[in-house]
Length: 178
Image (cartoon, rainbow, N blue to C red; front, side, top):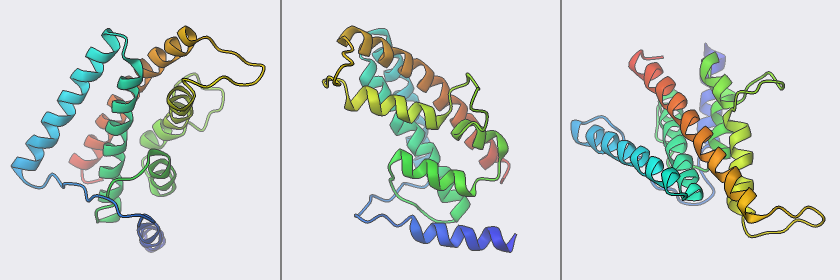
């Protein structure tokens, strides 16, 4: 246990970003709890609307924000302090290194390389390709835009399901003081 605490302190010190970050609102009052609940519900509604209307990249970016919020919450809980707003890949790496819950870790990075289940590590790679390469043409590997949109739709759908799984697990762990 002392080794885990030492590791948590080391990671907490490395969580300080190189640039200023915004502090997270902690849901320790009814007002902030309701604000967070209503914001998350509105995000899921907008994701549904976006997917239904073909705005897949918009859905993907909101999903990323939802997942990052849940991971910031979990990391802040484990480190007993606000980690602020962080980039998703940094959150994944830091949370995975200290998380003890096997189910959450499998959602972050599935240890089975042959698994067909999407994990966050795979989804981040998909998301980065979708968002950052939408207008780009790779040498000798032309991908028509309608195919890119289909990939974005798939990523939005799988990302939504993944976000709900991560959210459910983080809430479970928090409710049980784990």
